[in-house]
Image (tube, rainbow, N blue to C red; front, side, top):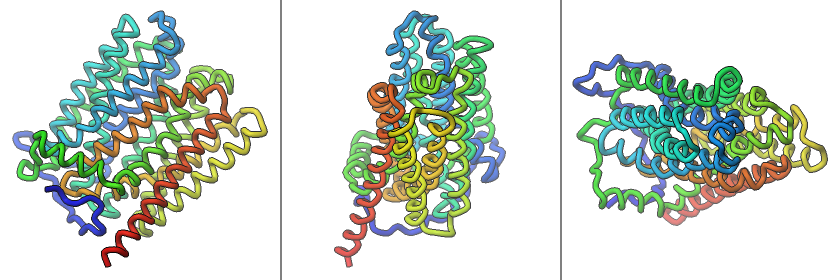
Length: 426
């Protein structure tokens, strides 16, 4: 049987040396080098989403598709991402972290090249699905790799370092996409991403270590997987803690998904001016992750998370208050995104690690379930909520407020539930 869900206390894991996977000769990476590599893998997701957003009008014209059909290329990617991300961790628990990442990079490269050569929007859907089923491996398995090697404050510092480096991608992706569309066409965006993936695959082959030795791997069979997923999804604390990060991400992704309509229609910005939204957003992510890195070990996760919610709620109050009385304008419409993402980045490392530690023997599977929750909610946001709210910046502000307040409710509920559990066990 699996470990019962929601254990009150878990022992600290020792730092585990990275084993070298024979027969490959791997050049050992420093903590900074490992963080850079894992961040580069995580960048596949935002590059796949953000880089082609400025190209939506050109894709619509070139493929003779409707605006909704082009919008659904994002939904197809997100649904595929959410469905497969549930399995990346379990596969890495059974077959090794390195193997899963290398295979995923091959599949992603094929799907990306297919997107560049698509002749109809329906072919584009198919290849976007291929991208979606493989892009999440770096995010999920990367978290498991970090937790394989480090515990507590060192793990939080490395995770926040990955976030800091990773945050560059959402900032530069739409800007690069806008430039590429201006000077070339939308297919060049996917060709550039294909080249990036090939280079990343070569670097992973040479430098990515295997942190899950064969003797520690879990069986990949239906019974064990069913028991694992049942234990995780029946854990109330898992839903609360994973829900915090998922809802915070949904509040951010609502604006990203609405950007192709909101920025041109509400703020009158062209494809090369998407940086107005993405630079403050990603600056908040970067500086919030930097703050989380500095705070790790100096205060407990609960206090750090409370600090993050302080910044998020301040951003929400200003955003709703401003747009309730004044029309959208720069920089006030985009400025709250800096403080929202700053707060959510302070929250993310602690909430992520607390959820992973609920089931320390199947961390890869837990990481998959975390990413599944975030991505599935992101797919709903992209396919339903963002199209319904993107006609009004006030509506978007209220939608973000709903996600942020619900995340706070999940966190408070998790804390109270844990206290009751501890009192009942005394």
